[in-house]
Image (tube, rainbow, N blue to C red):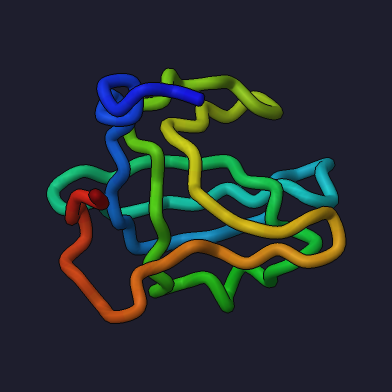
Length: 106
């Protein structure tokens, strides 16, 4: 269990995927370019076995925007998208209706 003050430290935002491509030499990683209002971020996500890059373009997702960047396969991932499921079935978490990119999630 975490307390509410710890939860408030998470900066969850809606982003729109504007570019997606496979990461070279990886079967499961995709490099995503995500628009978050005036900001653009690069995310590296393990979605390659569940989604084709072209089907992600234009999709809105929920991102942990204040996660420390991490190098993955030589690419800097500048946040983490939220998804639900297991190794066999992954579903992206997304708003139930379109909202402006960069919108804060509460």
